[in-house]
Image 1 (cartoon, rainbow over the protein chains, first blue to last red):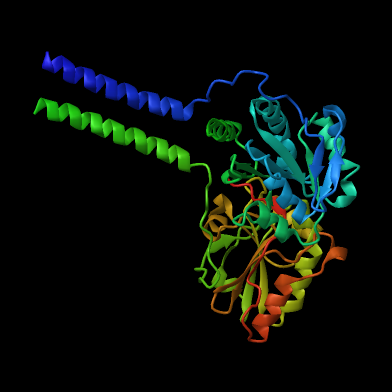
Image 2 (image 1 turned 120 degrees about the vertical axis):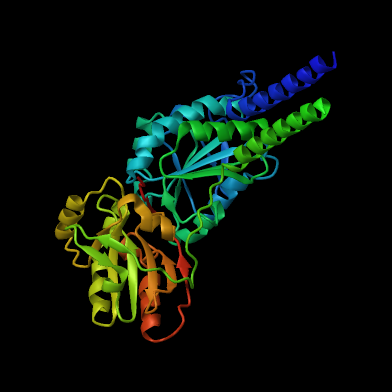
Length: 208
Length: 202
C-alpha cells in the first residue's frame, strides 16, 4: 500500500515536471475574441512636440507615417499616463534594409494575430525623412501593414537609440518587446525568428 | 528508505522544472559581451579577398589601426565608401591604417573584390569567415569601427560620423579620435552610435 503511495507521488511529480515544460514552451490559448478591438483604434498619437496627430481608418493609416524626433520616440515608449496596460512591440526598420523588408510580412501577420489579444505594435522607420511620403508609405501599403507607423527624424541618432535600449548599437532590423510596465523583456537584432518572438509575446501577454 | 527515495526524486524533478522555467524566462534578452574600451585586441589572422592571409600585426599602423566592419550590399556602409577611403588616404602616411572587415555570411571574396574595385577602396578588406572576429569584438552592424592605438588597445568604438548623408555630417567621431591618437591625447569620446545594417552571421 505504502509502495503504491510512493509511486503515486513519483508519477505526480513527473506529471508536474512535464506540464511545467510544456507550459513554458506552448503558446497559451487565445483569449476570448472581442476583448480588444482589432486595428489601430487610437485616434490621437502624441509626438515629441506634444501635437496630437489624428490617424484615420486602418487602411488609410497604412499610408500615413508620423514623423517623430528622439523625444517623440521616448513618448511612444512610455505611451502616456494610463496607457501602459498593453505590452508594446517596436520594430525599427528601413526601406534600404533587405532583412527588414523580408521580415515585414511576418510582422504584419503578428500584428493581425496579437493586436486583438492585447498587443500594441509600432513600426519606426529610420529612412531619410525625404521618404516619409514616398518609399516608406508605399512599402507599408504594399505590405498591407496596419500598425501605427513612425519615421525618425533626428540628425543625432544616438539619443533615440538609447531611449529604446542603451545596450543597442543601432543595427537594423531590430525588434523590441516591452511588457505592461514598460520594461524591455525581449529584443532581436536581424531578421526575426517568428516562433521565438511569438513565445515572448505570449509570455508578456500572460503576465498581469 | 523508500519514502526518502521517492521524496528525493520528487524534489529533483521539482528543481529541474524550476530551472527549465527560469532558463526559458531569461532567454529573451540576449546580451552579447562586446570588447570594452581600454581592452587590447589580440592578434588575429584573416585572408583578404584574394585569399592571402594577414595578421593584425602585419597590417597595423605605427600609431594605430581602424578596423571597420563593412558590407558590399549595405546601403549605409556604401554611403561611407568615399569617406572610409578618404580616412585611409589621410591617415596612412601619418601612421594609422584603415582595415576593412567583411563578416557577412552571404558576401563572398569575389563579391568583396569586385565591390572594392568598383567603389575604389584601396585599403585592405579581410574576409571574416564564420564571423569569428565580429563575435570576438561584438560587432553588430556595418559600418562599425574599432579604433586601436599603437598597442592594439581599443580607444574608440562605433560610428564613423553622425549622418549617412555627407551633407548632414555635424560630428566626425572617428576622425576626431584618430587626430587625438596622433596628438598623443586621450580619446575624448570613446563610443558613438548610428543606424546601420545588421551583420548577417553564418
